[in-house]
Amino acid sequence: MRLPSLRLLAGFEAAARLGHFSRAAEELNLSQSAISHQIQQLEQELGQPLFHRVGRGVELTVAGQALLRTVQTSLHGLESGIRRISTYLAPGLVTVVCPAAPAQGWLQPAMNRIQETLTTLLPVISVDESARFIDELDVDLLISDTPLQQADVQSQILFQDQWICVTSACHPVQNALTLVCLEQSFADPVCGDVLMQDLEQFRRSLICDDERMVLDAVKQGQTLAFLPLSTCWQSLQQGELRRLPEMPVRRGKTWWISRRQGMTRDPLVIGLHDALCESAQALMCSGF
Image 1 (spheres, rainbow, N blue to C red):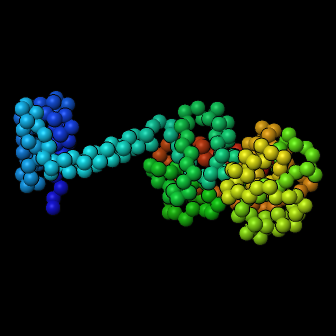
Image 2 (image 1 turned 120 degrees about the horizontal axis):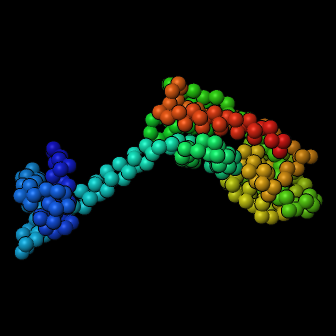
């Protein structure tokens, strides 16, 4: 079946919602006869009457009620899509996709500093890791633990992460600490050995499945944790946490940054890319 034109459906929706052809005509800047003609044409195409005349107004038939629900859902979807496109075309907007833990621990605070220089930058930070495709609308920069295998995209190492032991700066007495653990670390051959051997002396008080929850627990209690530097970088800089230098350090993930090769849709994409690379170098040289 051939779908009716959007013009006919929009006229129908306005008439149904307002209960009057003349009011629909005023809303759409058309004549009443034009709206009447549109409704008549739509009824002919569908082979169903859509309205009953009631005084000077109109009421929907059963077929009209069913069609109205479908049309309104479709129109709302179109409006949402158009608003989304207009949002992503805002001046200075650059979208960065990054996993949640480094996004919160390193990327967001780094972005605050970068915006002091790139004053027209409007960053969008997404932690949706399923968005692994650089395009001209949704994703400008991708931070991931593997290089992006996509044509016309360049990937380079952003920084080499490392696992470190941290505790709250408010609890300097090490022998009174308990251990907050990241659940998946036990399955990691490197981190698992640290938890089971080097940190065996500390009683476990909490196990979480999200690095950010572990970080919050360490900041709030008399505990320690074995976490990636990228997760706790901001807390270390702000003096909320301190590193335990006598504890083990292990190599973490290699983080990559990817963008479209050559010229991008906005020079700010390259500007932000270069600024993030500089910030990553500062992270590695921070001495934490």
